[in-house]
Image (cartoon, rainbow, N blue to C red; front, top):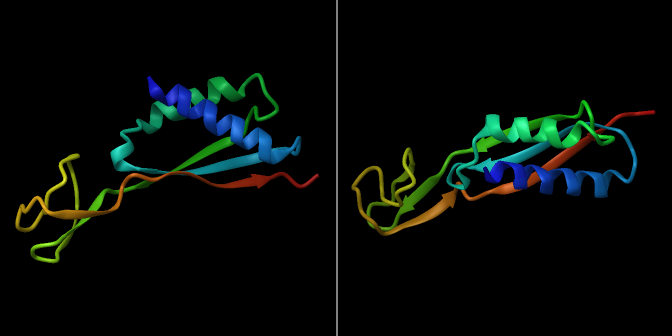
Length: 112
């Protein structure tokens, strides 16, 4: 369950940047090819934040589809499976445009 390790990294980064200020929500952007199960990450988040000052802080997950551009036919397609091939001509020579992201996008702080 690598979601627990990913959740811990998000918690650590959030705590470091919040510098003791209360946080209402944290938004992360995760690409399809990272193969993260959102429900598992949300569960890990709750378990990890419960004993911290982040207790009650919401985790917002933005999922990014995996898209490729074919070098042969020029089509841009979204991948359903983690197989790097053109969805139009099935050619294997593609450039990955999105799907590998793992970013902490924002933190919403509580005004005190």
